Every structure is written in C-alpha cells, then in structure tokens.
Image (cartoon, rainbow, N blue to C red; front, side, top):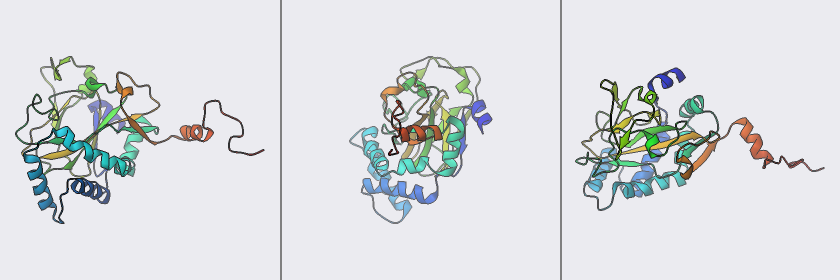
Length: 259
C-alpha cells in the first residue's frame, strides 16, 4: 500500500465506511435539509429540487451540514473505521488529526466554470491553499445520483512534480503527456491522496455532495499556512498517551500517585 501511494500519489480504500455509519451520515444531512421520506430515490429527488435554484452560495449551503456531522461525532467515527483508520496509520502514523474547517462540497449541474462556482475547481494542488506536503487529503461522495460521472479526476504521479506554477487557481503549465484517472467511488469508498497531487472536479449531470478533508500527523511540523486552520486530534500514539497522562512537559513527579 505504501509503495502504491508513493508511486501514484493516492490510494483508494474500498468500503472504508460501513453501511450503518454511512446511512447515519446521510440521514443527518437529509434531516438538516428538512427532507423526509423512507425511499432513498424520493429523498434524492427532493435534494435535487432544493439545490436547483439556490439563493445562497454553495459553500453556505453545505457549511451547517458539516457542522452537524462534526458536532454529532460522525466525522470522527468515520475516521476511526477500522479499515480506513489502519490505512491512515500506515501512511502518516498514529498521532492523527482532521481539519474541522467546513469541508462538505456541493457541486451542481450547469455550473462547471470555476469562476462562477468556487466549489467546481480546475486542476489544482492542495498545497496552493496552504496545506503542508506532509498532510494528506481524503475525499468521499456523500449524496449523488450514481458513481458513473461527475466525481473527481486526478493526474497520477503528479505529486512528484513538486509545486506546480499557478495563477488565479489554475496551473500555468503542465507536461505535454500525463496520465489521468477519473474516480468512480461507491458510497463508503474513500480516496486518500497527497496534497501535491493535481486533481479537479468533473462536470456533473446531477447535484452531488462530497466530503474532502485534510488529515495530518499532528506531531509533524506544519509548513505553509496550515497552522492557521482548525484541526481536531482524534487518535494518539502510545508515546503521546504517556505525555497526556503526565500532563505537562516538566514531567511533574508523582502526578498520579499519592505519597
């Protein structure tokens, strides 16, 4: 797995989120949008109607949905899913934190222009937005019509190109030849990729909610402007657990023992 990640810049974890937890995530989203019903297709149809003529920015629409998932611990539960968690530990260690800046993205049809829709992005690297090269990004679909179109496209091995020159959120130059891959993730699948990997949104025929989140080892030194973003520590190594028990770097004697 590590060799695959270092070679291509990403790894896809199939069925990273169990069905019960994923259903809870979707139900919380629909509940916050005041969409009711037992039939999934009917609820998605109502979701399409709700997003067809938004009076607010896509970011403002999705922001409270993320806050709700975070407050109820569903984001943390997702990261602690055994299969998903084990892959993350293999990549960046046990001292783990995820970014709590609102991360849900709404992509809608007829708005594929990055100038008109901030959440529809051209080729870009996460480091352009201040992410550290030692941090990784995860992405997973939350609500969509199907996995055939409208997800994300990546340029394999572009993480080896370094910092790609760019202006106005667009690359100024790319190699003449490069290999792309379009994602077709099912519900519960997650891609973990380098913040140096070039990726972009694909045009969608139907509205889609997805979840991109930066994840880091909180003991790694932050580079760029990542230290001004909010993160929540959600898993600790054995050494860090000892430090948390001791409580301070002065290592006060007999802190937990009475003499």
